[in-house]
Image (cartoon, rainbow, N blue to C red; front, side, top):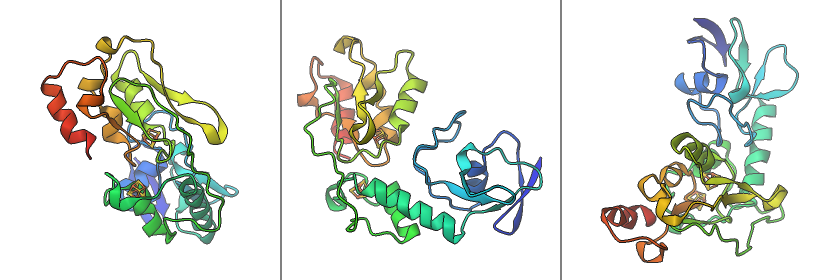
Length: 233
Ligand code: SF4
Ligand code: SF4
């Protein structure tokens, strides 16, 4: 067992967990978006799960830190909060905020973090970087909305974990990065309709099943009834 101190409280943690997990399991909320439990190599791409560690310069992404005996961690300093606010504002500047019409309303990671960090969901002082392109995922059964996507990568991660031949990947670069479909598999052989793990994990409803009538090359069946419900989340 590892003994460390988080925000002044002594905590005992099991080896093998990262610092973000230890914080969350001990009711210390650290904003985060891209991390998922069980990830062996978290991407640390959202830059939200920042903490300070005594003896370490600056802030660090807690999902990349293995707790050590005697570690002293601060999750709520002014510097941490300021950086988290900036990271969240940057995300929101590229996100189409339309909560009333959004399937993620009231269970949304952005809403939770915005409330916690006291950041308005509609960012006024930053150029709006929303991707308004008419990018199409071109997937037979999945729709994708780049104006909603926060590029957390969870859909790709679960696709990779669930499928021997994953079909989702990042495409393009920089501000134009989107989720892409590696579309060489014939639609009839795609595992997606019986999986939908990407849609279930997406924190902002940016990837979701097409309505059955829009899904291409697919015979109606019991799975369509499932789609009916999930697609309208
Ligand atoms: S994803 Fe969250 S913040 Fe964005 S529109 Fe939906 S509920 Fe609002
Ligand atoms: S589609 Fe959803 S799960 Fe995938 S990267 Fe975008 S926000 Fe994350």
